[in-house]
Length: 500
Image 1 (cartoon, rainbow, N blue to C red):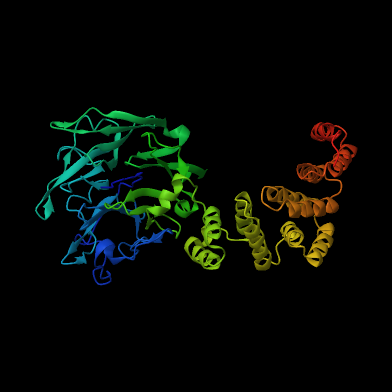
Image 2 (image 1 turned 90 degrees about the vertical axis):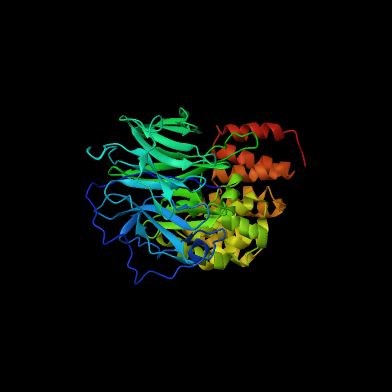
């Protein structure tokens, strides 16, 4: 089973009024049927999950999706924008069709959130500020509660009790396969501690401390553990006391330890990423994103996270990997889909393809890198891409383009162009085309003949390719321009007794 829950709670205190228990108009509710509400399973690009299940315009989704073990029920928590406390809702399959989302029979009057099933599906756990006795007022902190399945309904919720609940804030983050409760406990100084409570014959064991931090200092929010991956949500200040949240993950190593945290990258964290969970079969990863302007559920194939074991899942690297594996055949369609998906949250411009070109050079694939730069030049004719034009022209031996680029760069930004082009050329030196890299460096040196940085790159390349006498000349030119240049002095001394 895969159950990873995650909730960070911010509530209002106004009571909620609901027309019956149905929170969505039955007349407009779609005819959902089959596993995952009949949605087409995603591949390695996240997709909206059943956007018509619950309107993100009227309610904020504020939890992961909790599937029952048999996949016949989905539970979650939401709160109406600007009004009510968070409440727990559910939908279930009835004669093959998914029901209109309803308010849980025990929720709606207090702040309830983060519902999670026990491994056997017979208990539903959640956190709440409800009083422990009817005569008491609602609590100022949160405790962990559970309800037990009774035929087709649920019992009155009961507090889990000590040692799980405490005088501090207690939030349920996940439930392990053995029934262990993973709890975040925050004290009045906003120091969070993360515990695992294992089930016993009489309740739960004393909590084992897993992790501790000061929220006010580190802004590193909730912990959630799984058997191969764990998540943390990092809150980044954006001013005015507000924060954006991003998901990080670490993976279990063969020795049982976990790898350093990795950001889940643009694919997950565009428009913020929150509330991670897995489907019970472990095939799909769910999370909440605000990339459309509203809090919506997204899902993606587990393989997208498996990739993170050895890679950072950024769009630049994804496209680089696509080019390396299958050339440019799918590039245009992929970028087109990404533009629709990421919308205003990601800038697809000349800088994007340039970064892809650099990744391809780092992978020692010069032909693909040159092709990527060529595409960039063609797609963005009004952008200042003189350095890439110089590299492409010199690499391909296009004399007319090289002459035009040199003439244009001299009139605008010769040193900037030469520095960028020479830097790219040095990357080309690691491929199988050092001779073409030298042509680019020589053109760069002509463009900026007094740039010691460009000249040093040319001299280094000449020395590495065995053109020692030419390298000596260039090093001497560097010292004429900058007599105290330590690097040039040391390298000139090393080459002074070497001849071609």
